[in-house]
Amino acid sequence: MRRKLVIALAVCVLAGSADAQERRYRDQIMGTAAPSVFDTNGDGVPAHYVTFQGTSNYGPVHGAFLVEYDFLKMAPHADCPAGTVKVPIVVSASTRAVTVQDSQLFLKDESESARFCLNAQTGSFTMSLKGAFAGGTGRFQGAGGTYQYRGGGQVLVMDKAGLPFGGFSVSTEGVVVLP
Image (cartoon, rainbow, N blue to C red; front, side, top):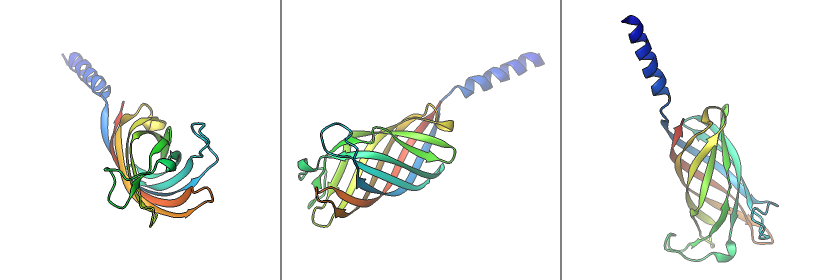
């Protein structure tokens, strides 16, 4: 009888460990974006190289990604506050990595969900975007789930081609699903 109980408990423990775990993900990051030489889609317009650092509920985070804006198609839009224009995002980061202590969590932004609203007079902007966690390394290997970030920032200077350099602050919230 005792042997059957031990086997039954072992089966329950093993079966329970196969269930995916959902964990809340939250971070607060700050960073800078500057024009780069990377042309992510071959259209002749360089992407911005974005670096960031901050904190998350998993510990310190830092990372980088590429984003390409279509400044020629800036226009007022219902998604943006009065006095601002929506700047379309062509490519956002393909995949970006958040390094958290001993592991990396990969994030795949959904460019079509992006809202980037710029006040051309002041250089201030707001932004939001949705995406999906797309695996990782270490404890995040095989991770899934979704996230959304919201934030804003300030364009500080423009280069001679009209490409901006600026800083930003963003809060991300989501659910990481661990296998």
